[in-house]
Image 1 (cartoon, rainbow, N blue to C red):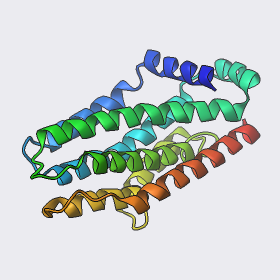
Image 2: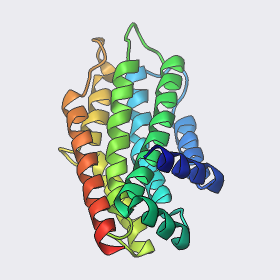
Image 3: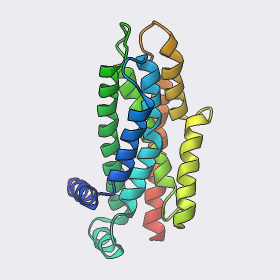
Image 4: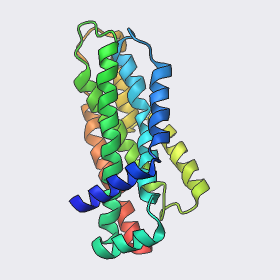
Length: 214
């Protein structure tokens, strides 16, 4: 698996396809936030943007290999393992971006005696895992059409942020709601527990479908 992860990471870096989602996310955070804002509200805004970014990054990693290269890797390591490596690579890359963003937003925001970095990191992790699940379920072979795949990805990301019961919606709401309080930053534990389960289930379905239909 280590070799597969290195291979997928090298493909992602060399393809430069990561530039679009990551730079758009940087613009989203830079335009939407200002120094000195209440930190919890700023973190809620920042981590919400990680949902579509994670879904987009997963889609990139799952589709970045040429068909011939994909067939060679599948023959050597198995289709399910190759797909899992792509999922883990994309998720890890966005988690890193999310962690850097949380620390940067915390540094420039008004903390008012609150120590929000841990809560922000939990919220970022929840949003990234939710987005990764969406990306895994909205691309081939589950959604083979490129147009429908992009539509499902965007719609799924939006619903994940507004639907009651969604881990991402719960995490963002927890941070934003607490922005007006003076208590310690909240930990969205329920959302944090649900997001890994959702991501694992999506990865299982995606890898199983790949092994059967590709």
